[in-house]
Length: 461
Image (cartoon, rainbow, N blue to C red; front, side, top):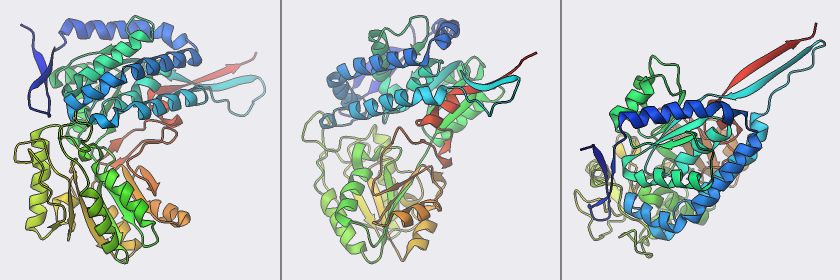
């Protein structure tokens, strides 16, 4: 009997789906087919490859009603938000629009008697190891530009969201992507993934997940010449200056802290507020947070569903308890059905009287809790924002764009936002610093990690 993996739904702890793990012969077949498909695919014009991606997008959008319900069952996001359709569309169309320019050859200044240029060539086989929290968005970030650039792609999705891989495979089938291995969806164990990465038969590994997972990828890839793109942990800060438009900052930072039950790579996990507006900001933030409805994600009224699993919620509970023992004050104290140790259902919490000796202000929470800390001025805010092992995004809330740009230049982060947060612009590079990882996706630079330069030096005689 073959080994299987199960999706345990956070809704009620039952088995939502079960799938067999790929056999060695399946993995071998996928890699062999991918390699064989590369020559014809890489010779196709960029515009033709891009047309398949639009057809893929159309097919995926056509399934969205079913997808939204599946996501609620798989990872707990409420159906009221309709899945990830609009953001997926933005990213796919954005990368398609950038492709021709990003992938065209570069011609240096003319030199008599020579033709010189640098072409962008595909790497080969790209392995995408995707997470559960934004399972479609994080997948298309690499799958779509990877295929447009002329690569073949193998997807290994998180166990919690295995059905996402199946939906993506079905969308490519409906789009009539040329058969022969250009895209494969494999159900793999961690051991199988490490073996495939270490085999030297894949050319690039794109991973989104924990810092520990990123280190495991790096160990597995050692000894091969495969490249890696790693988006790992985050503890994204926000700074609210005294001149900020408070109602706008409150509305957006509450959403940025708690959407997806706080399980967002670039969600807001700590907020620093100028002392002059601290009390007004905290009052408004707490009032809006108390309006959240926590419950079954299949209910249209639910705004926050369960976390992905009970252990994740318990980790957040532990951070809250530790902070309170050290003097933090909890402002929400909301009672919701099912919120108890071991349960994935967890009410949102806002903490004040916090400091950087508390885990909730230093270690990744990935759940519905945020600490809000009073600061004297810009200098203290920047110091605290940089006091973190992570650096994915940071947001500054102010009416002074020049000052935001100046302060943003001093923050150790991959993206600086002004007056917005928890967002990816497909025209801009998505990257991070420190323990957040390395590599770039999205923007024209996202194609660089999925291609390699090839120089042509042609001399007339």
